[in-house]
Amino acid sequence: MERSVPGAGQAAGLRLLKPCLRRHALRMATGLLALLAVDLLQLGIPRFIKQAVDLLEEGAATQAALARSALAILLLALAIAAGRFLWRFLLLGFSRLLERDFREAFFRHLLTLDRAFFQQRPVGEMMALAGNDLNAVQLAAGMGLVASLDAAFMGLAALACMAYISPGLTLIAVLPMPLLALLARLLSRRLHRRFLAVQEQFSRLAEFARNAINNIRLLKAYGQEEAQAKAFARLGEAYVRDNIRLARVHGVLFPVSGLIGNASLVLVLFLGGRLVIAEVISMGDFVAFISYLAMLTWPMLAVGWVANLFQRGLTSLGRLAGVFAAHSALVEPAAPEELPVSAALRAENLFFSYGQGGPAALRGLSLSLRPGEIVGLVGRSGSGKTTLCHLLARLYPVAEGRLFCGDLDVNRLSVSGLRSRIAYAPQDVLLFSESIAANIAMGRPEASRAEIEAAARLCRIHEEIVAFPQGYETRIGERGVKLSGGQRQRISLARAVLLDRPILLIDDSLSAVDLETEQEILRALAAHLRGRTCLIVSHRIAPLRAASRIVVLEEGRVLAQGGHAELLRQSEFYRTMNRRQGRPGAEEGQDAG
Image (cartoon, rainbow, N blue to C red):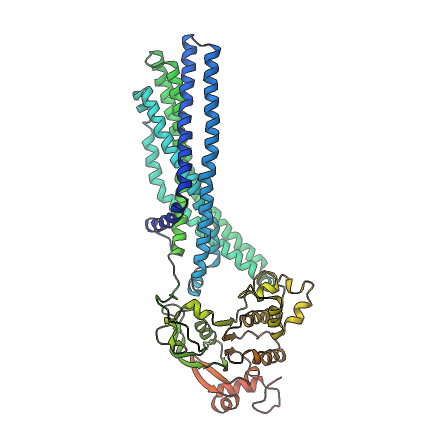
């Protein structure tokens, strides 16, 4: 996995924040004003303490005077408490709003990306970005922003008040501070690299866990529980090791910040005490100076914490920016043509490979699918059947002049518009951990129960659904774990049928169904498919014998096409398939039932 460059990725990440900052500018401004007001009010407390101490030292203190000072401090404390509530509500609330907006934008952007992106970036990494990385951004934009602004303003204001009391003593107090700035500068790049390593290791950990949980039945069947547990433990140890390496760097900043703050206090106590003895400053001034120095200690301590929060946030922003910078290779045309009335699809000399330099999955394939025609597609594994379905469904980009809908190049048509004409039942059945009804109605959430049941009846799954205790409201578990393979396939097919679109692609979606049921489903679909374009991929010849035309693919090309009897004469491959699927002793061309 590539490591991001600190500068470019972080700059791109910061640009992602601008829309949210503009949207919540008023909230931010009000919160910052409340924060500055709290800091100003805090500066007043040492002044009242100074007055009370000076009165006590001069022997002029009275109960009324001390009560007035105490009341003033109490009122300031109440105002500070109200201001703190206000800025916390506004500024920390802003960080949560930013997290919400960023997460929504991130998810929306993921939905725009094509299959090629997700083949290169594991799901575990996307989960880590949506979790850990967004949390790091939220902390940086919340407490990180507040602490940095508070520390900067409070530090400058405390220095000004200290300089007002004694410029010389102030200069002495700040002598150790450049060391802290230098240290923070030296460690920032190391913090970036180590936090990046932590986040990437967490992505690997999340992806491993996702894979193991998704394939838990296979792992148990192969007795791999112990091996998987050990592999997960090794990833966990590497994650802890990376965190410890990060903690070593982070751990240097806090102790050094505290040490520098205490060094300043030692100098002020020693030299400031001598000034009091020499009556250069009063005892009240000295106490006030110590109070302001304590206020200055917080910004010094905050340097390490804020640097860590910001570096984590910037690193995570850089990782998120890498995803936002990715775009689908399927680009919507600037001025898309109107979708043709015809549901015909045509490929001409179509070439395609997965990734640059990869082997060609399709090699000059030419094929037409006419409206009202049911075309069967057969061929060896790897011959390009599923790839063709992916391209027809517009899941991958194709070169100009290679794929047409009607007479128009698909690259001149809206991607989403063309997809709205196509219903696709893929080879890999994808079901959600929802009810059966919700899974069937995924493409048409507004569909009525009667329409859902009609699609299920057409795909011969209705009787099995109603046999469940909760019928159509039965929740099927992760990836349909509660269903058999054949049930999952028929639910997936019912989902495609419910869309009621002019083009239907069935990519070996009934391979787990027995032959008799498959033939029954295809016969039932015949009426539904009247006037529609349908492509049926299958490894079994018998269900395709009633197709208008059967196409044989070999190494990404059309090897032969025609009716069943015609292919038996023309294609050796088709004859071999037919013979192997026939009943023992049956005549050539007679298939198993």
